[in-house]
Image (cartoon, rainbow, N blue to C red; front, side):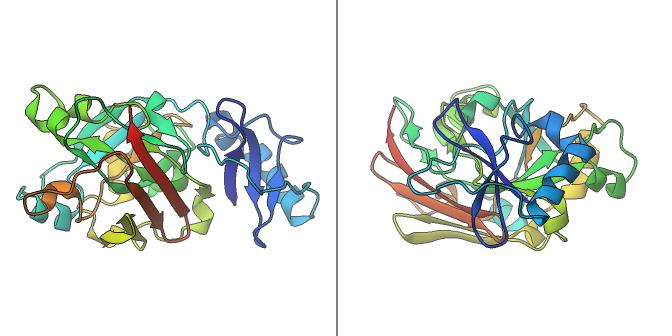
Length: 285
């Protein structure tokens, strides 16, 4: 299933995109798309049954804003330097263990919402990423198979980053990762049954129409199952948590000087095979 949330910010309603591309209203079945829903197999079954029976009313998609596909996100756990090609382009050694940092849930916006360049920023960068949405509690998992059983689905994430704040301003990466609007998510939450192999997905990103990133999740140093298993040894993942799994080569930081960091007026588009497409215009904060 392709689950999404549509409407004005803060007042989104749950919806489903059917196989024919028609937007369907889920508000008669569920209150929202969140961790509670993803952990409720019976509720998900009712959605599937209603969709298969053609019982869901259509929504007019014209002019409808698409919001983040998940409400009430618990935490966003991010993996840095998780692609061999990205490590090479930045001159970093591939890490022996996953590099972990957090983004605040309030950085999340819709896939086509405006992204703000922070005040004083000179090094705002792009990063297309595969987001993993957790559907079962993951705690001290023993195997990769157990880890995949905890995955409810997948989405496109844009891990926008301010590199000066991240690298040159002391301390951890958090200052460069948690600026407002720095995590567009969606358009859809695609349930795990529609993604038979999360290590076989193409990721692409364009800036002002120029292709910048063209990678594959096959390049991940730590695949999705290992990332979830590993994280469960250090923290408990709950339904409604999100894991951003890293970005492939092609970010501005890895380009020759002068590096083409983002400015107000730039337009970034990104997509992942089967998971949909985003488009953001950047403006000054």
